[in-house]
Length: 96
Image (spheres, rainbow, N blue to C red):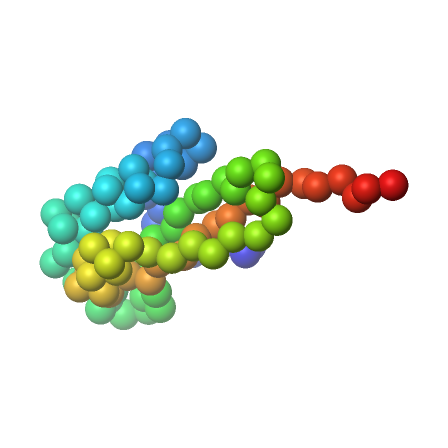
C-alpha cells in the first residue's frame, strides 16, 4: 500500500509456512506480548496495529475466502490488533 511509518516484525517465513502454522506463531506472539501491544496501540500517534498473513492460492484456484480462526481473532482483539490477509492468486491463461 505504499510507504508507511511503522514497525515491522517478521514472525516466520510466510513464503514457506502454511496459514495454520503462521497463525500458531502469531497466537503465541500475541499471548506473550499482549500488554506491550496494547500499550503501543495507546501511544500518541499510533493509528493501527496490523497483523498480516500471506496466502498463496493453489494453482487451480479462481478465488478464495480467508478469515482468521476463532483463537487468532480472540488474541488479536485482546491485543488491539487488526488481522489482514494478503492473497496471491495464480495467473490463469485465457482459453483460445
